[in-house]
Image (cartoon, rainbow, N blue to C red; front, side, top):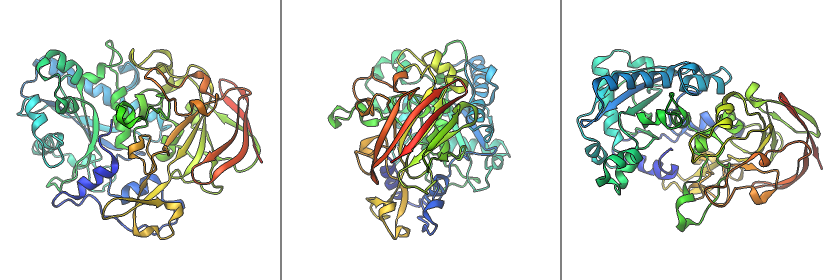
Amino acid sequence: MKKKGKILLLAAFLSLTGCDFFSFTSFSSPLSSLTFPYVRKQMGYHDLPSKGTPEILVIPVAFRDCSFTNEEMENACEVIRKGFFGKSEDTYWESVRSFYEKSSYGQLHIDGKVSDIFHYDKSVYEASRAINNENEPTYFILNEALNWYQSTHTDLNSFDSDNDGYIDSVWLVYLEDSYEEYFLKHPIYRDDEALSQFLWAYTYWYPYSSSLSPRPFSYSWASYNFFHTGSKEGIDAHTFIHETGHLFGLDDYYNYDYSLSWLGDKTKPVGGLDMMDNNILDHNAFSKYLLGWIQPEIAEESGVYEVSSFQENGSALIIPATMGNDNACNEYLILEYYTPDGLNELDSTYPYTSLYPLGFTENGFKIYHVDARLGCYETRNFTFVDYIDSVKNYENYYLEIANSNTPSESAVSSNRLLSLLSSEGTSRLYFSGSNLVHAENRDLFQENDELNSFTFHSTGKKDFTIKVLSCTEEKGVLSITYA
């Protein structure tokens, strides 16, 4: 979970006294160079680097009314250490480090440390009420925890691997139940919405000036008990892996409007089966393209294409809305060959929890429609002007990926950022319906399945035929025929 809509978040940050969060640097580069990391940096974000050896500082937090004994606290710190930086065999599935080493095909090696426990001199309830202008109580905890850490350690600079003056990322893991378990033990707070939000897992950004050097910026917050969500027998890092995805700048791919009946939108654009949707499986080809871990082949001509298992080497294929553009921040179809092994194996064998769907259990092509076009926004009032491909002098605006999988947060409410196409046709495109509806094996494109033409948001209908010729354990073969 990543809290708040992006435009509301920008507005709030800029309204803060003394805030230097955004600089709105003019964009004078050609469109092809406006990559995801470049745009994020120009907007003032200091994301966790997605390549190399970035450093994460993990700080366990104990409230004044923490019920853990000293021995339980020591054990918790060891679980946190293994959950973040341990080997695969130290956990039920993967640690944060081991997952991202595999997901990035060896291009990312997350380093860092788990500090001693920071004892926060407020009860859980008091901490949830310690708000400032942004209604975000964890700002106080982050600031105090880092000042405490700096007062007792001399290695804060080691957590700025890219030397941009900001800590790569901070993880605050509080030694308390998440809200559901907390309310069972404290029924008096059952209807306390602020407390339920506080006792959850999310990623945020610290917008204030700070005397710390390097300064804080991106951070995540979650209960220690999330390490036991999917398994009571081993360390389960699913939630921590998902939130770390936000630290790289990735969005949620589920629909925040789904549960709001008054908005009337019941769409599930990726069908629930993705790390940035239901916290399960590996990241998809779009996410890895954004983060620079893969360079998909662009299918510009008719022909037969072999696509290796995505788990094996990150092979992916793109059909662009406009030929000649290989920027991830654009509109296109992206195809990957899914296999239920590697990082997909566990979640394709056992449900994450009883409420979560099982991952695809068969081989086949996943075909996603991506509309990650950059939008031009007014710098004064944050209003959407148009997509960048329709604006000639885009240097006068700030840029951001315009669409979201949440309609109310999308520049054009009918346009989704990422949608999984189904082999059964557009009637299942967004997986509309009840909580029980999710993507299944039948939505994969398998042998003899076809996709005939597609209508892009930016360019309209494009005539072509994709036909899957064969599916094996190692690769999928398909033909693409342009009209």
